[in-house]
Length: 154
Image (cartoon, rainbow, N blue to C red):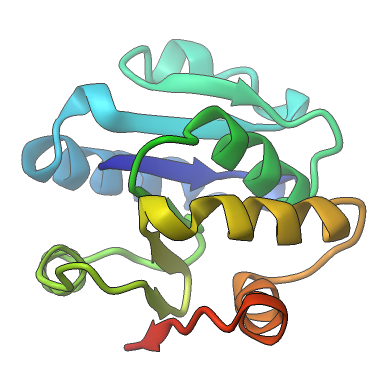
C-alpha cells in the first residue's frame, strides 16, 4: 500500500499545515513505513523539500486538487493507494479503520482507500475532471455512475 498526500494551492495559506503534516507523517511512517509515502505539491510549496526529505515528491503543475490527485494516482498505478487530503486530520483510530477494511474500497471525509483492481477506473474518471475544481466525493460518485464501483463510506 502507498500513501498519497495531495497538497494544492489553496493550502499554501494555512499556518497550521506544517504542524499537521509533521503529525500525520510521523503516524504514517510508524504504521505504514516511510518508503511508502508520496506527496503531490504545487510549486508554491517547494520549501517542503527541505522540511520533509523522507517524502517522495510529485509535481502538481496546475495546483488544483484534482490535477494533483490525477498525477499522483498515475504515478502510483499498480498499488493499493490511500489518498489523503491534509485538511482533514488523520488519527490512529481512522488509520486502523482503513487498514482493517480488507478488500473494500473505502471513502471518508478527507481520505479514500483505492484498491488496485479499481484504480484504473478512478484514474480514467479523474482524467476527465482534472482541469476542474472538485472533491473526492464527487469523483467517486462519478465512478459509481460510470462503472458501478461502490465505495463504503465511513
